[in-house]
Length: 261
Image (cartoon, rainbow, N blue to C red; front, side, top):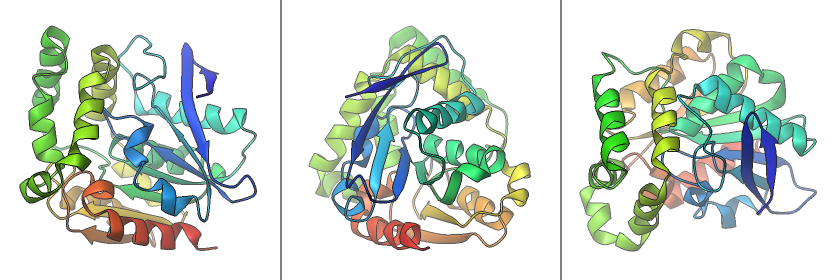
């Protein structure tokens, strides 16, 4: 797959769909790759030219020295748009990708037409102890010790039992994530503080919430929707990766929203 230069490294990306279709940029969650969107591509490419990329520190993109900040990840997304000569796009991001979407909506709204913010948060309450413990674990032992717990939080038990074939690729993405890149991005997520600036966003926004999401809770998703004037929200029967666990309902909701003029 092709790549572009970004600050200190390169960003791996992939494009699917008709060249003449409206462009849609997708941003992945912490610990995954652009392949996390595979179950959306057959539907989205009927309507859009879909650009997806491995976030810095993930997949085939460069692992540059951390810690990172959401601002840096947002600038990476803008660099990709500039490289592809795309001034304005639709955007969809999940979890960390949704934080990138919030940053873009606040700081580069002229580059966006409409934004789907999925299973994400604008700020995490309380002290950062749990994030720091996770960083310490991954720095000392790698990804393997934390993956079982992440999989349990990201998918409900009934779904894990019913469709292990859907869960396994995500598990493998987590296991193969470079610990240095993961830790650098954990710092960005830990320190995210966007909620107070969302009141100035004037873009069409859809917030997708997982009813059983323990990673970015329904209350955190609703807080984003409440902060952005005119934002809509939809709650799906899923945990954190609603794009996989509630694929049909997710695809229908986001496609209908993103297609609007």
